[in-house]
Length: 157
Image (tube, rainbow, N blue to C red):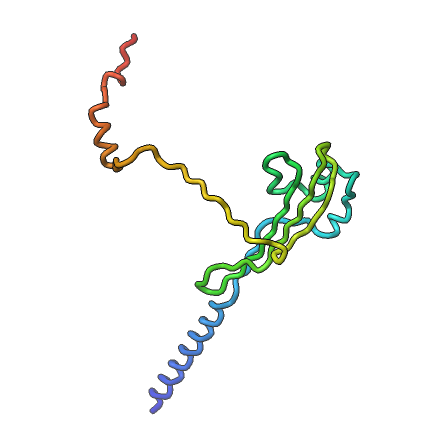
């Protein structure tokens, strides 16, 4: 009788420990990526007066800038949440855009959030190989007769 009671207690502990482990494992994992200046830092900037250099000194340089003409600096921060084995989901995104005049003076400062965003379809550009109908093995075997050992001999004294 005593052994049966001990066995029940052991099984109960194992079940409770397994349930506790399952609950803890399903807790959310939160990850933050990127950097966005705070509202206090942005309040120190003055539109029409500050330049790229003064913005860099106050809030730092961004991780992204205008690609074609450097008319803007973009600071992006994202927060992702993941439960257990599910795919991570973006729960928050902040984007601060500081645009500049051609002279490098701050023209505008804007803040956008995930709710302001629109889905933008990106065009996929794939460079196709110019080798058609030839497998990797065919390419390797095709190069066997091209080898010339004389190329590796040093004929100069």
